[in-house]
Image (tube, rainbow, N blue to C red; front, top):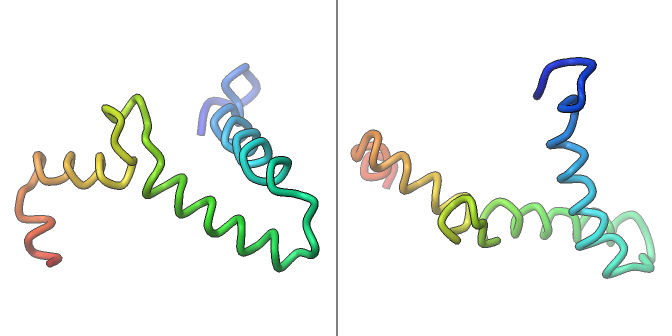
Length: 82
């Protein structure tokens, strides 16, 4: 996402992977098999994108914050999809 060859190279991905390992893999392990890790990963990604409260989003989940943003930009987006 960032420029190549500097301190910002892959910083966002590395930060997210670190969170994933800390919050899910190490906390809920040991794992019985890859299927258990896969299911837990899908649950964690759903939580991360849709339900976690984020301080940069006024303590709203990212999906809710994005929906509010889109309604302010173009109020017909959500009503047309409903």
